[in-house]
Image 1 (spheres, one colour):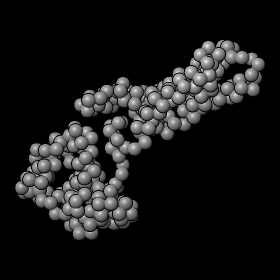
Image 2 (tube, rainbow, N blue to C red; image 1 turned 120 degrees about the horizontal axis):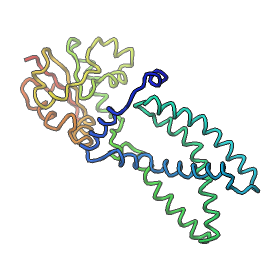
Image 3 (cartoon, rainbow, N blue to C red; image 1 turned 180 degrees about the vertical axis):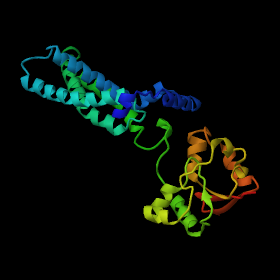
Image 4 (cartoon, helix red, strand yellow; image 1 turned 135 degrees about the horizontal axis):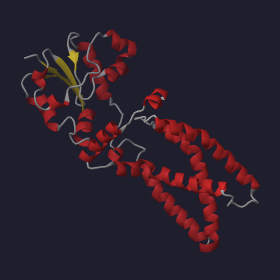
Length: 285
């Protein structure tokens, strides 16, 4: 990270790539921000208003204990803000959600205090019943956004990481009976993770196979995948892989016709299936 700060870099290329992918899926960066960060942005705004009120002396001086607690939380944010400033200056292309979640802990405390103080002032004007009802409605609306991310779904354009028993069983059978001289080529990636799950990290390395992380080039998947390689290749295809590429990503990189060609093109031979996992053997011819 420090090297990136000193050398200077820009994440513009990766952002442009992600924006193009989202546009092909019928979405955009702005919509994705609303889905993921709207609630956090609202609480950040409330926390910011409270920090400004504290620093300008606009808060009631009679509540010294409350103001002192506010000061402690605000000071705690200084270090976190500096860390995020370094991230921003280094143009890090990957911002893990755990970092955002960490900084949102004090922000949520400040936002909750701002809501409480604002509700107290509105209660004198609108009445306690209306203020409570309004807060309930607001929280129910905000709750819809984080609730939609509880389970993996196209809401955030990411596949679920769940792996079915059928896929693991098929991978284990493949490892048991495969020809060790034949390399793998997968859709987006080879079966390294699945092999580690069924045989263990050391066990999968002892198999002596190659191409566990290799992927089929996108340009040849739906056209000449059977003639692209000059030696045989195993191509594992799980039901979740098909759902991810065809349904979730709408064939953005690996279209439906590519999966159909695996089943119908001479030279592509289905050598194993269990209903949720298929293994194809591409022959050199």
